[in-house]
Amino acid sequence: MSGWINQGINGVVIMADYLRILESVMPIFLIMILGAGVRARGWLNKQADDTLMKLAINLLFPCLILEKIIGNKALALDSAENLFLPPVLGFFAAAIGFLVAYVSSRWLGLDKEVKRRTFAMTVGVFNFGYIPIPLIMDFFGVKTLGVLFVFNLGVDVAIWTVGISLLTGANPFKEWRRLFSGPLIAIFLGLILNLLVERSHIPVTCITLMQMLGGAAIPVILLLIGAVMYDYFQPGILKEGVSTSLGAAFLRLIFLPAIFLIVAKFLPMSEELRQVIAVQAAMGSGVFPLVMTRHYKGDVPTAFRVIFTTSILSLVTIPLWLRFGLWLIH
Image (cartoon, rainbow, N blue to C red; front, side):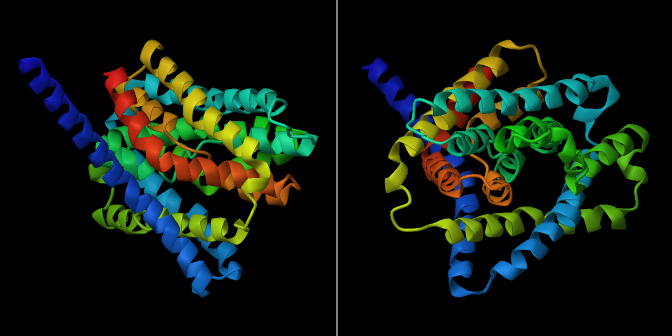
């Protein structure tokens, strides 16, 4: 009898954990759905996309990053492992994803090289920023969020070197200027200020300004993501590439997360970095590769199938992987 009671209690605890994670995830997806809705209503037109994206990338996100890094004890000199290991792991997390997806693409019936390259790019890039940021803030706080930004630095480098070369076959050094984006500059500047200046020495007005502007970054980007997804959705687009969708779901939501968590479990690293990897392991494909695919003449339908399928299914898998990942690393 006591065994049944214990199993029942454990089941209630597991369900409570799952529901808490689901409650943290749902607002993110609801904002994306609202983005699709405002696009459908014409309240957010395509002409506004470029302006809002530039505003978010060059002002809102840098403010968010600076405010969370300055004064972050997890990124101090006595925590040097959080300054050097996270970007290395971020780079290889994306690069290995590219390699695994490209090799696997030949078994999924993708008959053209452009489709295989697009598949590899979109599967390899997980949603490393917009969804993890609010989740990490909710579960772990500012210290782990600072490590996330440094981890993402490595992911960005992988995208604009290995990823762009994979997608286009071009020389990645021609795209090096894109590495110097607003968020990347903010990370470097924030790390320098964090090492040299006490947060208490920065005027309260400046901190408040960064908090107010940074607070708008995630909602603006999520609305744009929903709007862009609405633009590309066409009846029948998923039926035409079932094997592509299923293959992407297996790689991005099952196989690659398992690799992430094995690394987080057995590689020596800080607690904050383990938490970052546990969250990143749960993510579906990022949406930005859809924009890159369109710009660099990749196969847009393939990119959409990968991103749409993994995004929808991740609503179920994110809570499951998060709970398992946090149990594993602890």
